[in-house]
Structure formats: structure tokens, C-alpha cells
Amino acid sequence: MICVIRIRGKVKLDKRIERALNGLRLIKKYNCVVLEPTDENLGMINKVRSQVAFGEINDETYKQLVEKRKTKTKNFFRLHPPRGGIKSKVNFPKGILGNNQEKINDLVRRML
Image 1 (cartoon, helix red, strand yellow):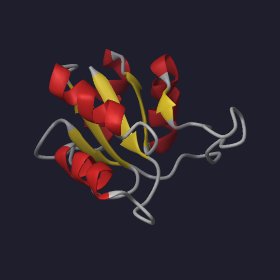
Image 2: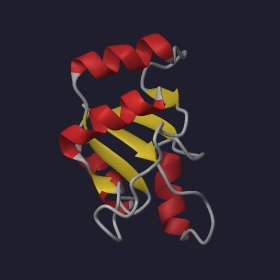
Image 3: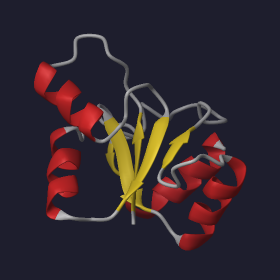
Image 4: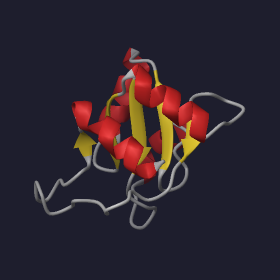
């Protein structure tokens, strides 16, 4: 499963990207969605990769996410800003945005 977290806000956002974020149900900053990797979902994620952090989430992290952030729908979660901040200067200019592969598990744990 793929975990997608919206990192950037709404300021100066292109309408096509905003529509794709709404399709993923990532309306506000620090919202999280866990999706199956279908062609449609991967296409939307590819379109918004400059606004979100995404990667492959493991089962242990997903169980913690469901346990701490119980919602009626099991694939949508609201998270806190990450403890320790966002390392935006580490791979400048990208930082944490884009594909984080396995590092997304650490990010989710910091945001619980």
C-alpha cells in the first residue's frame, strides 16, 4: 500500500493539481491517505508529487496509524506536523517532497 501525505499548502496552487489533490481527498495540509497502487492512483500521485510526500508503508506502521487515528474510513487520516520539523534543506530543493520509499514509515511515526 502507498501512503500519501500532503506537505504543502494551497498558496499559488495550479487548478489541475488542486483537482488531483481533491481526488485523492488531500484537502488540507498534513492529511494522509493510504491507497492501493492502481494505475489511476499512481497517475494522480505522479501529478501532485511536488506537493506531497509518498512511499510504501509497512503493516506495522499502518496498524499504528489506524490505532492512534481511528476514523470511519480506514484509509484517510489527519496527522500532526512532524516532531523535529521537516528537513527541507537536506536534498535541496526537494527536501521531503516526492517519493520517500521506506522513509515514509519514519515520517508517519513522527506525525502520530
